Image 1 (cartoon, one colour):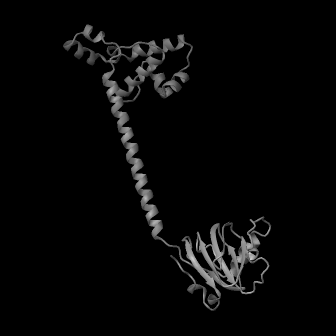
Image 2 (spheres, one colour):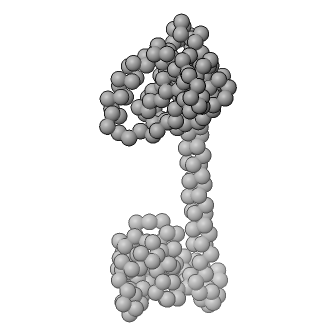
Image 3 (cartoon, helix red, strand yellow):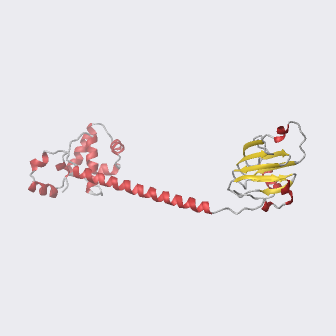
Amino acid sequence: MNRIDVIGPRLKQAREEQNLSIEEIAWATKINKNFLTQIEEGILPPLPASYVQAFIKAYAQHVHVVLGAWDLLDDDEREQRASHKGVTAEVRHPDAFGIVAAASRASQQGRILAALSAGILILLVGILFIIRQSRTTPAVSDTSFDEVTSEYGSHYANQQLPFVADSSSFWKGTRVDSLVLDAVASDTVWVRISIDGGWTREFDLLPGSRVRWKGRESFLLSLGDGGAISFALNNKSIGILGKAQRPLWNARVDRSLLGRAPSTLRKQS
């Protein structure tokens, strides 16, 4: 017979004398309330012996009840130890919980190793997913400037979009009649433009933003997403210059592009 039928009532009595509820003990020790109730009633919870002993020790410490290791042994274990060491030798070491502590540490180490293994597995799966995604390039489809303008113009017509500086101020009143580059963003995108090697600006455009730049000879464009902006040069659609979800660097736009199809305009570095 296990000594829990004696220890349990002792713990319950100590708890009641300190005006503590079983819920407070469960919260403080992080032990399931049902297990604590079974211990108080002298019933062994359906758990390994090492866990039951650890629960009893934690409960006893919280209500300031001193239990020796002898108190936590069942009758068979007590007889075996008495035949080798004697009862007095065992009583001299109250609370000798080395075996339970070692089992608890081993269990804790096992949980840590399992958590580390799971974390490493999740990390590897994430890396493989990223590698696979990076190898998958979305198909690039040409979208005319008029289609993009119509689609996003109606959606953002009543919204306040950020003001984008017009490059006309660069010329300080000088007549500009050579090139006009219009753009409409279909997604949030970073843009850097240099006009005739002089006027250079960077922008963060929102979906539906429309921009117009004026120049004499050429525009040099870099985009965070080469497929996020559709262009028109001198009112002629030249479409999308790059590939979707890939940056475009230093793409030159000049009057030589007016006679080309949009699919021949992409330049990816």
